[in-house]
Length: 216
Image 1 (cartoon, rainbow, N blue to C red):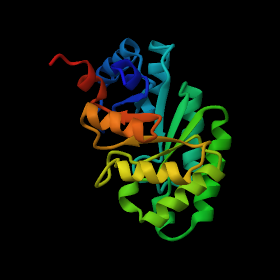
Image 2 (cartoon, rainbow, N blue to C red):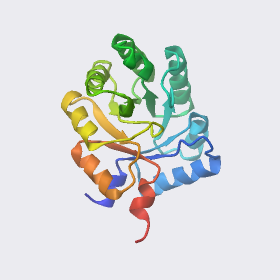
Image 3 (cartoon, one colour):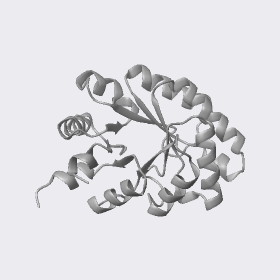
Image 4 (cartoon, one colour):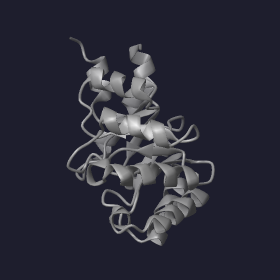
């Protein structure tokens, strides 16, 4: 796998609470230069990123990072982000509902947000570090049933991130229509390659571009 093939699968990410516009602009400039799949940035910067980098795929997050916002709030977040110029939405699933066994409510929320998103890509962050294996399997099935485009491992703010085991489980239970995004704790080029070879279509990382492009 070439460096460019890896970068073409990277959502170049900056979601820390203290992110400044200068840092976001640098991220966007790197994404354009190295042809990453997208940038993943805070909602407050989406409009300016779209204006300043018109050819760039802009992804943002909703219900982030805990997931238990009211469904209507998430829908409003998504609609605002899309109006501002986002082309991809990463939503945090309601983990509290999952742990309560309210899978019907979880599926309905994802379906409603996907309806609002329309043709925009919707990725469902399930935060695997908090889920049992059976809950992960349920989320694979629910994500597919609700029409989402991707299932995503982690926010990067939980107690653990992406694992090869979770990617393998997702590949087994999501079916062919749902793609996989791995995020959280991916700190080496070798880890990125392993995750892509295991079945991921996207890698969410704040360090991927630096890892691949820096001089030895």
